[in-house]
Image (cartoon, rainbow, N blue to C red):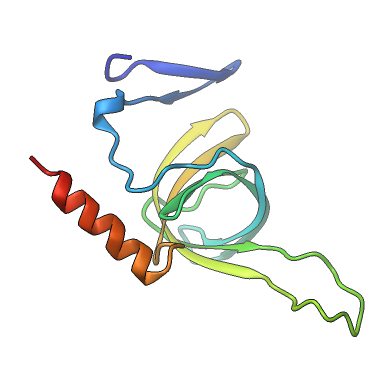
Length: 140
């Protein structure tokens, strides 16, 4: 696709797509829907909390759909909820909170698509170093 060509998602919404040679992501995206709570602040500093969905996720970031868009480049917190467990259950309760920075927003009718970058990649330190080494070797 040429630069600037748009991909229609639904009636009235679209996303800009880059050509495959212009991919800048370090990690592959997984196209899975994950429920998340999105915490952010509006332009006046008022705290926003919204139950939302991450449409795809990678070790470095995610694409999240929300109804209220925080200011561009603002900090957001994504919390992946854990299922309610009975008292005394031996399974540890795990709620995962991820700090992220909003890098882009696509406004659509009734919702916004937020591209966020995690403050720390979801990979362990050794895996992140391995990826960096591979990238350094592949530069021509």
